[in-house]
Image (cartoon, rainbow, N blue to C red; front, top):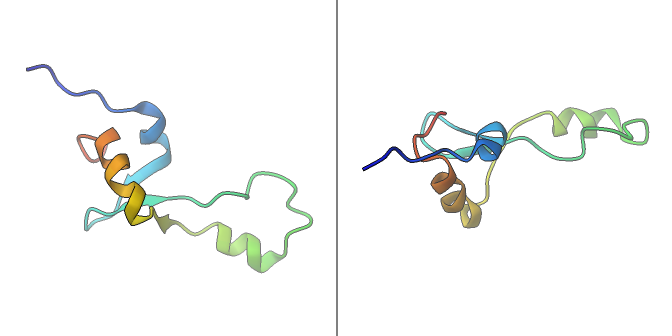
Length: 67
């Protein structure tokens, strides 16, 4: 049986935590930053977990965990 391919777009966007949960970065931190408060921009820097509803779909795109 051939090896499974990792979805490269998903590999660039998601990582696995030490306990196997899927981490992602937050949106809205790319441009138009002058209208956002410093606190808001600081909180957008932190990683968060993918929702439980989407995590199974993301795990299927990353068959080997850490690409």
